[in-house]
Amino acid sequence: MATRKLYAGVKLRETRTRLGLTQKDFAAKLGVSLPYLNQMENNNRPVSSGVLLSLASEFGFDVTELSTGDAERLVTDMREALADPVFGEMAPPLADLRLAASNAPALARAFLELHRAYRQSHERLASLDEALGREDTPLSPSPWEEVRDFFHYCDNYIDAVDRAAERFARGDGGESDPEQAALRALDAAGITLRYDDLSGIRHFDETARVLTLSTRLAGPTRRFQLLHQVALFMQSQLLEATLDLARFQSLEARAIARIGMANYFAGAALLPYTRFLEAAQETRHDLELLADRFGASIEQVAHRLSTLQRPGAKGLPFFFVRVDQAGTITKRHSATRLQFARFGGACPLWNVHRAFETPGRFLRQLAETPDGVRYFCLACDVSKPGGAWGAPVRRFAIGLGCEIRHAGQLVYTDDLDLGNAAAFEPIGISCRICERRNCHQRAVPPLERRLSVDANRRGVLPYEVAE
Image (tube, rainbow, N blue to C red; front, side, top):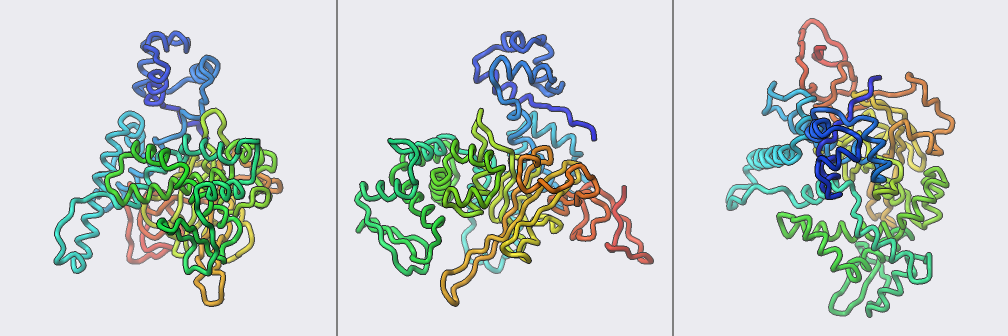
C-alpha cells in the first residue's frame, strides 16, 4: 500500500511563528533552501523526511504532531456534510477537500458552519407544526454541538486543566489518594458531605453548603463526582479563563462546557497524566488492571487513554467512542486517522454494536477502513444499573482502538495474527461517505458514485454501485 505524502504547511508556519524565526532563518536551520521552505509552507511540496529529522534534532519537535490535528477531522466532517442530497453531484473530489483542510482550514470551518445552519433550518421546517406560534430566532449551533466540537478540535486535551488536575492529585507530599484529597479540599471549603437515596447522582445546596451524593453510586462514580465538585470550587478561575478563550456563542453552551471542563478535571485527577501513562505502558494498556489500580471504571480508563496527547509526552494515539443501543454516538474522540460521523450512528459492521450481545466480555476486531488503514478495535458493554429494583438501566457500549502499527503494544493482541490480511473485516464511517460497493449492511447509496438500477436483477441491494 502506498504511503500518503505528508502536507503540513499550516503547522510548519505555526511552528516557525512560535519560534519567532523568519523564513530565511528557519530554512537555514532545517537545511533547505528558502524557496523549498516556502513551497512546503504553502503545501506545494510535501514535508520531506530530512525536514522531519531536522525538526526533531534542531527543535526537539514531536513530528507526529504534523500528521495529526484538525486536517483529517475537517476532511471527514466535510465529506459527511457534502453527502447531503442538496449537493447532488456537485461534491468536490477528496483531493480538493484535503487541500482545503490543509491550506484553508478557516474556510473549511466556515463551510461546515454554513451547512450546520442549513441543516438546522431544514429540520425546523420539517417540524413546522411545533414551530408555529413561536418567534423566529437566529440560526446558531445547538449548545451541545458547539461544546462537542470544541473538545473535538482541541484533541480532547486541555493542557492547563490537565496539569492542574495532576498537581492536585500529587498533593504536597507526593502521590496521594485523589478521593481523600477531594474530601480534605471540600472540608477546607466548609462543605458538608452527605449520602442519601437520591433519584439522581449529585446535588449541591449552595445556601447550606451541603453536597449530597446518592448512596447507590459505585466507587469510581463517587470519586469522580467528588473531584467534579472540587473542580467547580477550587479551579473556577482556571475553568472560566479557559471558557473565555473558547468564545462560545451562547450562555447555554458555556454552561455545558463548564460542566465538561469540571468533568475533564475530575478524570485527569482520578487518572493523573504522568502516573497513568507509565501504568498504561507497564500493563500494556490492560483496561481491567488499570481500572483496579486507579479505582476507576473501564469507561473512565478507556476515555483517559484517548486523551493522552500532551506535547512531548504522548501516549498511543487511540480513538474512543461510546454508543447507545440505537447506535447513536454519545461520546467520540479520535487521535487516529479514523474520524467518526458528526450525525447519525456508526458503521453497523463495527464490533462496538455487538458488545450489547455479550455483556461482561471484551470483543476484539481487526478492521480495515475504505482508505486502506487497518485498526485494532476493542469493545465492551458498559451498562449502568440503576442500583435498585425497578430503576432504569442505562445501556451503553464503548469502543477503543488504534492503528495496527501500534497494536503490538496492547495486551489484547498477543494471540492475533496481525499480518494476515484476511483477518481484517471491512468497516466504514457512515454509508454516505463509505465507498464500498458490495456492503451487505449499506443503508443509503454512497457519495461520489453513480448507481445502476435494473428491475430484472436483485442482489443484496436494490441497486448497484458503479466503479
